[in-house]
Amino acid sequence: MTLIDTHCHLDFPEFDSWREQAITAARDAGLDTIIVPGVSAQYFERVLALSRHYPDFIKPALGLHPCFMAQHQESDLEQLEQHLETTPGVIAVGEIGLDFFIQDAQPERQIELFRLQLLLAQRHELPVLLHVRKAHDEVLKQLRRIPLKRGGIVHAFSGSQQQARQYVELGFRLGFGGAMTYARATKLRRLASELPLEWLVLETDAPDMPLDGYRDQPNFPAQVARVAALLAELRQCEVGLISCVTSQTARSLLRL
Ligand SMILES: [Zn+2]
Image 1: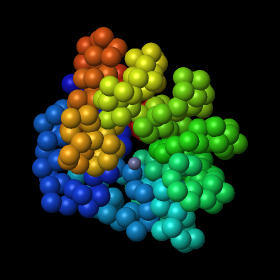
Image 2: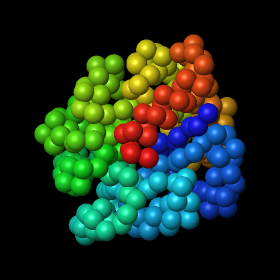
Image 3: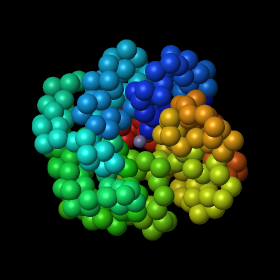
Image 4: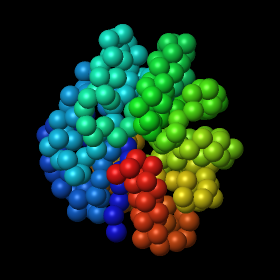
């Protein structure tokens, strides 16, 4: 059994005192790949250094996250493009997207930055890793305007069944993680059990989004095994099927 955590912020300082342990635990839990998306230019080097240190295990993506608008500078886009052109091994543009849920969201600035990064992904024929909150229709609109050959992943998917279908038609797959471990997440659980398994990939979003029962500690990548087990329970199938299909989906989408 192999598992892939398609979204894990292993570069965040929350892991500084136990990163090695978290990586060992992830391998022991059956993971063979962790995707680490960059969120802001000041951390690009941190993400890349981590992937150089564990070249067979950690794969980097680079992007400018909509929740860090205050940190982004005009030159960051050039830096991103520079990496896409010259740094080998960057597997996707991400984490990018739109978040209209945060305070002082500045939707116009977010949309502009998002569009510029979609154009970069288009030009470099890379998939994108999306963060979308309260903005699925706007994101779908922009993806139709700037179609991507290789699609991408909607991380921590929280939309409707109809939106799920629209993303898939645009070449996307949907990330499911800790949020569905909460019994009150009935809508998300229904989606996780009803959508075609080929549409889904697994993630933790660690150190964020701790699973139910683990809320007093930071989340960690080995937990993707619990996410897989829950998905198997919800779909009433073998966990081996979940790990096999979701890993294959991630592998072919991200060319791992
Ligand atoms: Zn994230």
